[in-house]
Figure 1 (cartoon, rainbow, N blue to C red):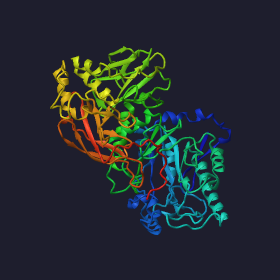
Figure 2 (cartoon, helix red, strand yellow):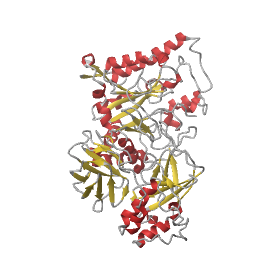
Figure 3 (cartoon, one colour):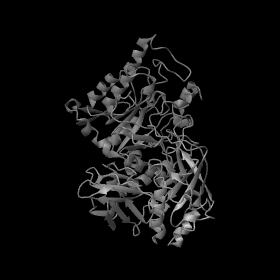
Figure 4 (cartoon, helix red, strand yellow):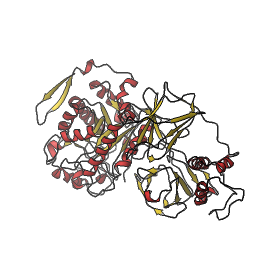
Length: 610
């Protein structure tokens, strides 16, 4: 493939010999995408001038369209340095980037020649094509090139929809006008294909019309004419190659083999001056791990200012991602979805050949237990990013790993279990409560006893029912513990243990849990010291308060990614002060506004932003 620089208002790329490229089978075509795991999304446009919602601000009548477009006069890009952007994106560990070539407002970042199209080159203060300089640098980097393209164009005179309350026309009455719009948007796609030959095309806005109205099949044919192996997201009325859930981390893995979570660092896609509600770098690293464990990618968004500078908070997050991905590269790129929480509480993933299982630890703790490993003893266990080998015991399908001697990563520590062949996981015989309490009471192994109590409690075995009251002021005289420390821990946590009910599964919380009899208090068992806040996914309820069981401390929580107009719950992050941790196992009580309701639906694209 030859690259030719064309002179004009700006330098653009075009490619020769594309017709000679043969289409690959789907699995080969998607390989780079499936292996990538991390991409960086870029929302940049005139909306950064006033710091308002991209396109939606006028669509929802929060501002007139006329006043929205006044931002063209303030879009300068005067400090824009595409070299610095690409350097930062590569440093983050991302393997691809997707930039907005045009959002729903219709303002193209390249010098479009399509009829009546708005662009930064012709209509903004910058008077330049600002897309080409970035793509030029991307094409010389290690990154794959992705372009976001809005199907709707709420500013174009040929498009039928203008705002939430206004339509220009009915396409059934003016089909020729609609045909002219389809020709317009396909002309723009033709321009983008000729100039940049993207590896990936990221559509948005397909919900406003049917596949037939968009002429989706013709659009795919057009794109593949330039790149037979182009990857398309799912937002062309399901004509694409992969799913794109938005904002909320999926509770259950999307059905498609290929998927990508598109995700903001704060609450906004584009730069908004007043939005300081950023997740911490720790939270973002753990979100990446969530995606890796479910076999997907994270497409993490940045929103540059109108002058082209990237906010400091966003830079800090990308740099922390870079530190973590560089240290743990083998446990990031090319990995595949791991096993369920039935076998290990920690998030996990396999290497591509299936012979290495990576366990991602968000807590500093003393041991790690993996169950159900049938007839497959690991040949080694080690800490990723170091040369540290770990001792372990293997018996009766259990792998018991000691973590006493390792240096934990400040975000997520990764343990690699290597096998001679891909391990076979089989359901372990169900727990039986027969004799369990007696065995616990007789044991002097404090750590093992308390962990066993948590495991049985989480699985719905109420070992202490009828043995004590809710504050342990009354205890069965037959309940005698060999370890005073275990006895004291049980008494401290009598509130939950005296009448505990089965907890929630590992998709919602990566640890043991239990529910009160009225299902309105959720108890979270916390092993060791978390590196960041506890995370709860898919809880539809409001949280009334959070406290530490047995000592009464009220602790803080914050909800991220809750969209007020959507029924999708956000992620509840709970701050657990290190000085209040129980040395054996801490239990946190989350009081809900009503009996618990769990969200298990598939997280999809956002079709509304009221």
